[in-house]
Image 1: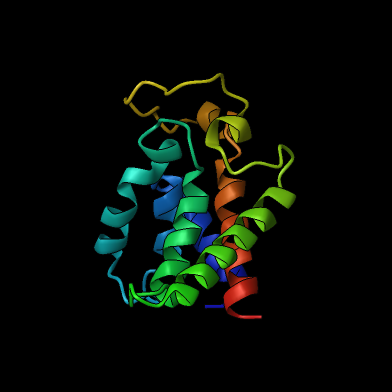
Image 2: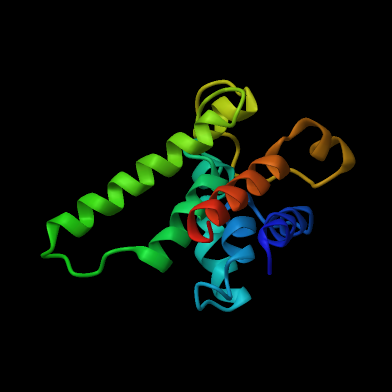
Length: 152
């Protein structure tokens, strides 16, 4: 799957009802050694800025999960590995911010919402929903950033 395919796969998953984290992680599931079901379950808590709390954008969380699965550290005693990984996460976050109008990775800021969590009840995916939500663009952006980093 080429770069455009990952971006389009993330879009398609979002349009099919996946949350933003599921859409990004799902586009990379096979590359990360996950089944589709595992990716959907792993990403399920991170939609709506983490359970509709409107905190960190789900697309960004999905991007971080992919990088963690592919290049994360596992030896808890090797501090330089942890530090390198955190530096990478910060770099990817900055890249995402630099390409958004609000220069943020926070869901509520990206969507122009007021402070605080939303109702835990998700909205119906209607034509109006897709018109007012730029999330499809954010999942595609996160997938493009991942491909630029993972497959330069």
